[in-house]
Image 1 (cartoon, one colour):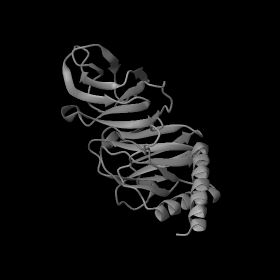
Image 2 (tube, rainbow, N blue to C red):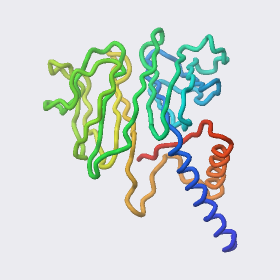
Image 3 (cartoon, rainbow, N blue to C red):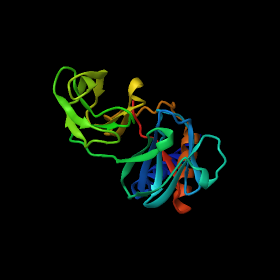
Image 4 (cartoon, one colour):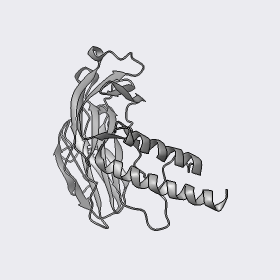
Length: 264
């Protein structure tokens, strides 16, 4: 590649990065979590458009970028024909520009419901931020705290998502326990990194309780470091095409964009 073409490619990439960054700020960001223990994998439609396919239990999607507004969100068993009257769950979801959300499909299948949890993208420099969500439909109210020590969250009931608290970064031996102190689930060696915001969701039925931890926000990496996506590094031409397509989608009038929150 000659210098002129290389310079043009770099300039184009920078413009597209700036453009997609502006687009992200003008959109809301929605992540969908499958937290219904007896539901099959699901397809998710937004205003009649298939945006998530075959999402299994315990998994969360990448971010869906949506312009601010109100949308009809419908859930079907994976592979089902799109017939609005046959959705296992349908609701109107209102999102605000610049706000990020986790939307969990929770409860048992016969009582499936959405739990909407706006996310925080702010944290005091040098601190970690954490909240917990109780999404186990038949589990009683629980506390979450240091094993044998103080509770960080108390009396959390289904389907509550707590407020965030800030803590010092480090590795913690946590536990989910009943208010009387009986341990329900140990969460040893829980690592909380500086400048990072976490949501920890208790899911599954009470007799098989487990957690899924999601990163809501991660501060900028140290100079010279690149975020790890788990997908490998795309080659230059692939990266340019991805940014170009994102820009074209925004110029065409918005719609759904996919964004991944980088995390290690």
